[in-house]
Amino acid sequence: MDTLTNDLSGLNDSEAAQVCALLRARLIDTVSRTGGHLASSLGAVELIVAIHRVFDTGRDRLVFDVGHQCYAHKILTGRNDAMETLRTFGGIAGFPKPAESVCDAFVAGHASNSVSVAVGMARARTLQKQDYHVLALIGDGALSGGLAYEGLSDAGDSGEPLIVILNDNGMSITKSVGGVADHLARQRLKPQYLQFKKGYRKVMSVLPLGGHIYNVTHKIKTAVKETLLPCSLFEDMGFTYLGPVDGHDVKGLTRLLGYAKELKSPVLLHVRTVKGKGYPPAERNPDRFHGVGRFCVGNGEPVQPPKPNFSAVFGQTMCALAQQDERLVAITAAMQGGTGLDEFARRFPQRFFDVSIAEGHAVTMAAGMAKQGIRPVFAVYSSFLQRAYDMLIHDVALQQLHVVLAVDRAGLVGEDGETHHGVFDPAFLDTVPGMTVLCPSSFAELRSMLSYAVYQVNGPVAVRYPRGGEGTYTADSAPAPACILRRGSDITLAGYGSMIDPLLDCARRLERYGVQAEVVKLNCITPIASDILLESLRRTGRLLAAEDSAPSNSVGNRLAAAAARAGIPLKGLALADTGPGFVTHGTVQQLRHYCGLDGESLCRKALEVCGHGNG
Image (spheres, rainbow, N blue to C red):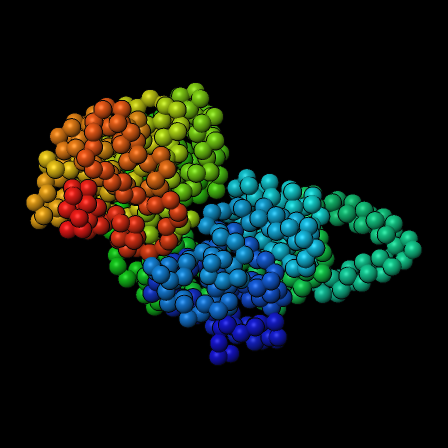
């Protein structure tokens, strides 16, 4: 095998195993240099190869759930050479992306939606009288999301031919009971049994009373099985259940997928895999290698040692607060490590709650806790919080309950790209009645604002902070709602959170052109802290508001509206944001430049506002 982009349909089992070995080596080598989601992709290699042996993903629709395990698929669909650019600016994305290849059926970056998408595609196929197969590849973790069960319920009831592949790499879905259950599971996966079942169906379909006979025998078989096996959730939903099966047996997987393909009904194939398979460091530490930076292949150690970051500071602060207050609890939705709560979980296990991938449930559970006198803090990535908007309004805000949201990954997050940038929460959180939104720009401010949110704010409150470490600004201006970091008379530069460093850089650059900029830092963006800003605008008459968030209902728009209501005539106005679309992937520095949010770009905008042309 001299290439990893060949058609796999003609491979024999030995050649398929060779392709798996080549793919695994390629993944380890590539991700060691680019970073990315390694453990998930390693665990799905044989599964991806088997799918490509049986199906044509250029026509058949393979829907990934989240897409962390899609790297082998990308290699096998003409992007092997492009893997060198994985997650880099201008390169290929770390998630499925139809714009890259017709073989990527659907964008996937958040969990639990694949079955719903697959049902939609299957129904579209039927309505359009077309002929192709639809598969949903979902991990056991994604089954903790309620949307997955909504999709499964409808898919099984629909009768539409589709295949749901459950990639189970750790969580037991249906517990087997004793030796009888194990024996029957093995028997129904034997080639002889599958061949007999196919032949029996075929014969019964042509006999005059075959349909009636088949229904009777099927009911008898089901009744017998249910006396020996626990109730199968998936079969009750209407699926033909196959499994569990070894997810690293490419020969067996190929055979079962071929069988599932012929059933022409809802099928669920339960596959057991090992996350990080084939790379010992990833097998030993699958969580650490789920999303990893550049590392040394020999020992798995990172090329650069980890630096202090906002998530870690949040976790440390939570531990300090919990030590003093027994009412404080921490909640996460399957992101314990990512949100910095490992130490909290170790020290305060009775007050730590991981609800799995269920952000809506987490918010509503927090509301129940708050109603009974607990102080809940829900740590969640900005882009994942989007799933809980309804619960924020109905379950928290309606009763003005004191629920604290620790909104991690706020703003541009870097290499994960469109699906993970936290650029929408400033807008949608502002629409929640009674909400307070605080924006620290330094570690010190995160500590102060988190404590302030827990003990000084009434009702729902969010503390939003960026991914990674702090910049050159390390001061603490909390709890003031706003402050002036730099005096000036020609233009007001306003921003919050991680945009403070670019704005201070912009002010220094403007000095070279004789422009004195006043930098106003907003610590609270909901309700908008406008008094200090308005005083500044009365002096300067010009405004440049910068934020790494979407323009709709942006803070900049709200500031401009506040100036208009106050009767302040502006001689110049510019709003710098991420724009109305979705921002691609790359380093945060590259993306700031791309969006016009770095110091140099902001300086050019400010000069235009001040009437200096392009400088």
